[in-house]
Length: 239
Image (tube, rainbow, N blue to C red; front, side, top):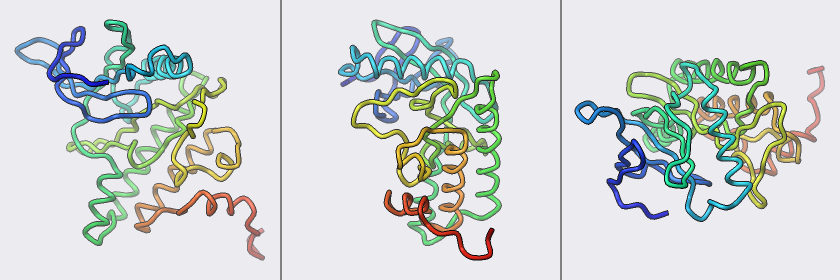
C-alpha cells in the first residue's frame, strides 16, 4: 500500500505513516472540527491483503474486540468501519514511546529501567490484562503481550495496544498459514510446543517482560531455551 500524504480518508485526514504491521498500515490522522482537529491513529488493511478471507476476518475480529473494550489501560476506539472499500480502525493517538524503545535506550546507555518504574509498568499492564481476560463474561486473550505493544505516554499513562492477534477466550483463533502468533522471546513454552493461547500465556509474557526490564536481557534467547523449560527437572527440595 503506497499512500500519498496528506490525504483524506472519509472523515479523517491521514498525515503520515506511523508503522507497518503484519496486516496493515497505521497512520497518524486528524479528525474533528477543522479549527480544533484531534489526533488519532487509523489502521487499514494492506491492499494486497484485501480479498484474503482469513486476513479480513482477523481484521474484522480485531475491530469488534477493540470496539467492546473500555479501560484506562487501553487506547480509546473512536470508530470501526469500511471507507472506500477499506476496513479501518480509528483509535486514540498516544504520544510517547513504546516500552521496547525505552528499554533499548536504557541498554544503549548501559543502564536498566529503575525498579519502581518497571513495577509500575507491569502492575498497570496486569490490571489491564485482568480486565480484558474477564470482560463481559467472555474474556479476551491478547496473545502478543510484549514491550513493543506497551505504550508509555508523555503524561505517564501505560497502555496495552495492538489486539491484531487477540481472540475471544471461547473462540478458536485464526492463524495465517506460515505465520506464528506472538514473539518467541515472550511465548510460554506450551505455546511453542503447539499448545493453545490462554490467559496464563498472557501472564507468562508479562512476566518475561518484567524479567527483561529488571535483568537487562531477555528471559530466553531462543525457542530452544523456552522449550527446555518444559522438560527441565525440578530442583530437589522445591516440591
